[in-house]
Each structure stands twice: as structure tokens, then as C-alpha cells.
Amino acid sequence: MCLIVFAWRPSHPLPLVLAANRDEFYDRPSQPLAPWEDAPGIYGGRDLQAGGTWLAVGPQGRYAALTNIRDPRQPPFGRSRGELPVQFLRSELGPEAFLGELAERAEDYSAFNLLVGDARQLWLLNSREGTPQQLCEGIYGLSNAALDTPWPKVEKGKALLSECLIEPQPPSLLDLLHDPQQPPDSALPDTGVGLNTERLLSGIFIATRSYGTLASTALLVRADGSRQLVERRYGPYGKPLGEIEFEC
Image 1 (cartoon, rainbow, N blue to C red):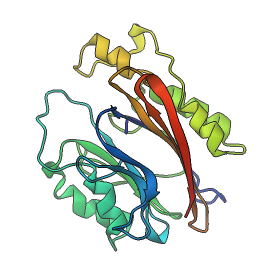
Image 2 (cartoon, rainbow, N blue to C red):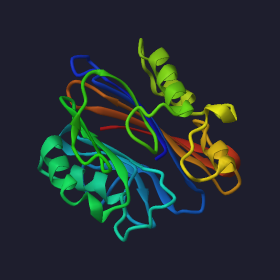
Image 3 (tube, one colour):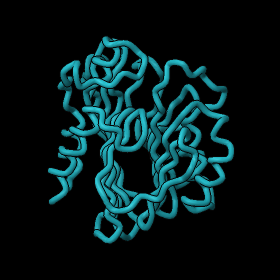
């Protein structure tokens, strides 16, 4: 998952409005949004190579989403970060307690951001910072750095999300995720991957022959804990592969 923009409004009839893109190599096998047969109550996409997920919802109004932290100097670790959202969705711990426990073992994984919550509270753990953070009401953006790092795609995604909040609907959330415009080189971050790669990764929506946005997801969480999930999937060069929707 390379971009998550979300509005957290705990006193609103829609406490969470979230739009997220998962960017990955197209040949990495994955399962589209679906109920998990081996984990009743969990709905989400699934990474079939490592078994985890980038975004999913679970029992008791829970949801979780993940991004990696971009650092080409960091060696890969043995454990998959994709198992972390699943651990939360299967856990009996609340968001704060779960992230507190995870912070003690975060070094088992390559660097990550993990967003977890329910209809009442929303928490984030950035493994580099090491301390769980409860989020207050606001509009946020999360890519492959710290929360609200002002990368162009994060700033633009937040601005587009704010325009959808009067009456948020999945089609408008999914459409904002399909913006392929790249910013000027002068606005790009320097994360150590080289200018050409920074350009490739700079747009909200990425579409190349081998790497790009595989899935765009809109998530609406209601005050009663019910959720609406809609996923659009894409193939090489951004070819549309269909749309899936669940109420859960």
C-alpha cells in the first residue's frame, strides 16, 4: 500500500472515510477483496505470496491498513509486514494495547506504518518512531514515510479527499485515487532510490508495464461499526480488471 488518505471524525455518522492505493509488482500473486474462509469476519485483499494483507476489516468493527517505509538501505527482514493487520483483526486487544505490544517487537519487521481502529478510536504505529499515536479528528495522509510527510501525492490526495467529504461516496473516493499526474522534479522527495524512480512513484496512481497500482480501495466506517468496502483492481499499464463491493 503506497498511499492512504483518510478523514477521522469520531463524532460524525461516518467516523472514517478512507481511500487507499496498493502499489506493487503486477506479477506478485494476490487475491481480490473477499471474505476470508479461514478467518470468519475478515474481509480484504490478500497477498498470496506471503499470506498477509495491506487493508482489511474484521469482527467488532475493526479495520487495519499498512504501508511500508521506503528505505533502500534497509535489508529485507524475514517476517512479512502484511501479517500485522491480520494479527490485529484476529486479536482481542484494543488498538492501543495491540500497538503497544507490537512496538516491543517491531524490529522483527522491515519499517512500516500500521493504522488500526474501530468506530470509536484510531491509532497509528510508525515503527521508526516506536510509540503508538492516537489520532484526533482531522484529515491525514500516509505514504511510505511518516504520517503527513508533505510528499506531493500525499498533499494532493488530502486536498482531493477534503472535496469529497460533504457527501462521501465510494465512486468519488476511487476516482481521486486514479490521478496519474506527476509533480515537477523540484517537488519530489529524495528517498535514496534515484530521480527516475522518484518520478515513477510520485503520482497518486501508477501505471507501468511491470509495476503500478494493483488495487484502489474505498472504506466507509459508520458510527454503528458497519463498513462499506469497494475495491477496483488494475493490471499492467493501469488496465481496469473490475470492481468488488461488500457491506460488512
